[in-house]
Image 1 (cartoon, one colour):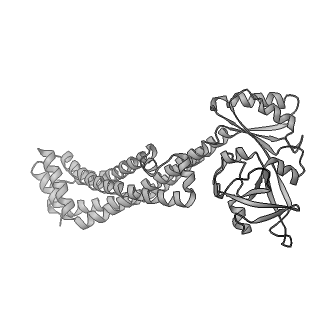
Image 2: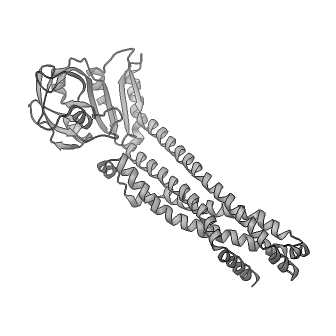
Image 3: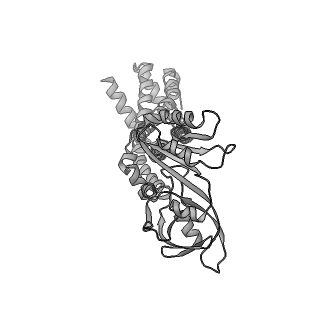
Length: 399
């Protein structure tokens, strides 16, 4: 019975000073929205990047050791292709074409040119327009940024080292590719046989081994190291899963830092609550004196003020939690629209609901509510303690 009365008195005081309670609650709402929305943002970026990088985790990239050779030889490629694990081997030739122009009398420029098996290229990239080269025709595709920078389109001709090639396709812009190294955004992409006609090279710039079972990565790495680096280091073997793990750790740390920055606003709101409750104690000094004079215990006075702060913090935190879901939706929409193309999101299998109500996002929402409530609780302890310590006679004489 006593607890019900204390709750009613706490609720009555909040309503009696409604404007002041609302202003104090707004501080908590802003703090909760800041902490939760930043947490959802960090969760969205981390989940999206992790999903995109998951395609890289099973890649092993083999590059030539420059102190030994500038290229991976045909013999080395044959050894790599015999690696005793299930996977796909993509051998890539890459160089710079020194004499590229849009017309016979146009100013020439230099451009990166990639020679790759076109069947593998189809599996790696999507075209935003046009088609892939067919047959033995002198046809090429170019990257999205190359097309924009050089103002070319499907159907345009390029003159490369004296030979004429028609652009039949433009590759969709790559924010992240199936291989971190194989990025065609600013390049011309041709089949390997056409590359050999245009550029004189002694081997391959790098080889990408895409392993189907990620548990076989270590076996593949050991095989390549043993066969190619047995006597001296001739190639460098880079396991992409190590890099992706480091990147994910960085984004996880970034999310924590952003949440900590957002928590500063809750600290400021807590100071506001402390000030409001101290003012409430001063204004209700006589009321406290009457309660103590008629037999109320110090613990009851303390609980009344604690209930008041918890009610204020709980309501404000709940409102902030509800608003943060809307804020998280808006943030996710902006982030996904600005930084991640629709096809990339489709490839990851992520949806707005999975990002907004994923485990990490839900944890951020709950954390925001709990932190907001905890801050108001802590802010109310000292005013409650001060009210309970008042001497009844001195409180009754207070003007």
